[in-house]
Amino acid sequence: AKSKGGNNTVYFSRDMEEEITRKVEMEAHLRRAVEKRELFIAFQPILHIQGQSLIGCESLLRWQHPTWGLIPPGEFIPLAEETGLIHDIGKWVLVESCIQLKEWLDQEAGEFYISVNVSARQFQHPTFLNDVEEALAISGLPAEYLCLELTETIMLHDAAHTIEAMKSLAGLGVKLAIDDFGTGYSSLSYLKHLPLHILKIDRSFVQNMSDHTPDVAIVQSISTMGKGLKMKVVAEGVETPGQLELLKELGCDFAQGFLIERPMSLEKMNIFLKKMHLV
Ligand code: C2E
Ligand code: CA
Ligand code: CA
Ligand code: CA
Image (tube, rainbow, N blue to C red; front, top):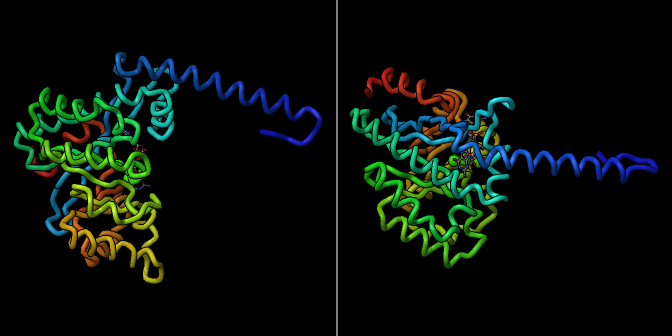
């Protein structure tokens, strides 16, 4: 931290130096993480609210480092984006997610989709469409079971390229979702130009819902808009039975959150599927 006093520049540069060293070190470790099989996927179920059934699950990346322990994505995804490592890591998540869902479908684990997060930089990459095609080909997963979660920030980049790329992806048959919907400061006009299937209401709105907050009106409006646009609406971050009940009344389609299940290891997800009588 920069403190008052004559030698504050020394502290400041030392902190920066440490920060840079830490980043360089982390980057080197992250570079090897895929090969060393330190990355794994946690699965979080998405519930069909009316039917009380499993409709999908989201892949959430985790890094189990041998000495640093479990590192959450918020700590290494930004670094992966900065360094371009996100392309290899993102490809790995895509392939693994498709292979895993195909395996569950083959075990007749009901019918549900897998939702994979795609960062803006990964999406902009010229090989991204090809990566998705390859993941589908390698796994044998039919395209309609794959959903890609994009954020509104992709619209801030090259809008023309974004629209073209999304149309090509939709042409493959994959589903497209807007993640953290409502937090991106972008205009709503893009909704009518894009082949979108799912809107994910950011958990900040869901968690602030109570009788006297504007959040209820926001969640209701997004749900209504989703219906009008023939999109499904997912509420994220559902933690209480009261929230789930309210979401049902407001006409929201799907729910995801700690109330239903936390993100789980493959082992726990298999137990969950058994418990749901899906395998
Ligand atoms: P996100 O896509 O918005 O994912 C939802 C986050 O909310 C996850 O955090 C999840 O564990 C957490 N969450 C789920 N239900 C609840 C709840 O009821 N309450 C609360 N408080 N939190 C809940 P996680 O796993 O730490 O992931 C953080 C972010 O990292 C994700 O946010 C996503 O932006 C990014 N991320 C994760 N995996 C990947 C990946 O494979 N690729 C890319 N590009 N980004 C990823
Ligand atoms: Ca997401
Ligand atoms: Ca989200
Ligand atoms: Ca988020």
